[in-house]
Amino acid sequence: MTWGPWCMQFARLRDYRGRGVVTTATYEARALGVHSGVGLMTAARLAADAFLLPADFIAYRHYSEQFKMAVASIAPQIEDRGIDEIYIDLKAFRGDPTRTARSIKEAVHTATGLSCSIGIASNKLLAKIASELDKPDGLTVVSPADLIARIWPMKAFKINGIGPKSAKRLEYLGIHTIGDLAMADLGLLQTHFGRNYAAWMHAAAHGRDDRPVVTEAERKSVSRETTFERDLHPRQDRADLTAILVALCDRVAADLQALGVRGRTVGIKLRYEDFRTLTRDHTLREPLDDPADLLAASRECLRRAPLNRPLRLLGVRVGTLVQVGEITEDPGPWAQGELVFDE
Figure 1 (cartoon, one colour):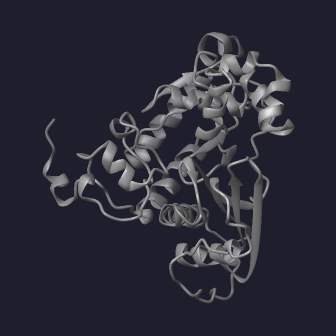
Figure 2: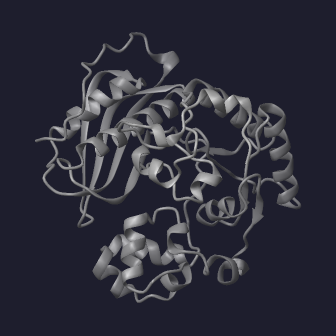
């Protein structure tokens, strides 16, 4: 494989030393086990010859806005799910939905020069799975009749909401595929995952999802979360957790800025090794959308959380949103410093 001169200005991943995490990875890197949320030191062991590219959130926000404007010019009924993901309600369109999808893909490419993958299905859960099947630049239709033949053979973690830890626990129970999960005893799932999560997984495996495409409701919060590949202890793995938190704050801040909003309530979400979940919120005098301010506010939340047990998930949320144009006073600066995962 040969590389163009552009790559000479970037360092190989093998030379990385630090506590950062992967924001995203090319398909070649993903094939080697490098995914979003993986520590860069771990990624260096998996893909030493890969190039480490700097994040450019200004560019991401610009292309995100152009992408959504292009889609809205054809199909305005959109649920915004962040900087690079949306759901589109196509019920108002008659005829073959793939024709509309091709028009959307052409509009996005014209506006941004980028490709996008589209999944068409009867609900959001199946559409999400369909959108992942033929990346990059895919257009995939999944009907209810395709459930057994196309969806059930897939690994259980392909369902959005089943993370690596849950997938490993399912495998321990002999449940490897979505079909296995659909056929699993609900009582067994409840014993190991709790009533609500078990019921959701079982319904999802059967392709059931009654969530509407929310196109007009005012967004109440913006959040990002990461399920770890292994449990991380707040003390022994403090550096890894700090890097993950920094990356989450960067992503949430980018989402806020792309949406043109700021938030007054910052929250953290912790899920422990036993699947118990804890949240803590902190309300600010002035709204924020800056990653450094968000990191500082997240630290305030963590000071009120028990940090003496291993964690399997960390999340950051910003609520009480206001449009930037409605803000009359700039938010005051937060004290900055390294996050400490101590009580």
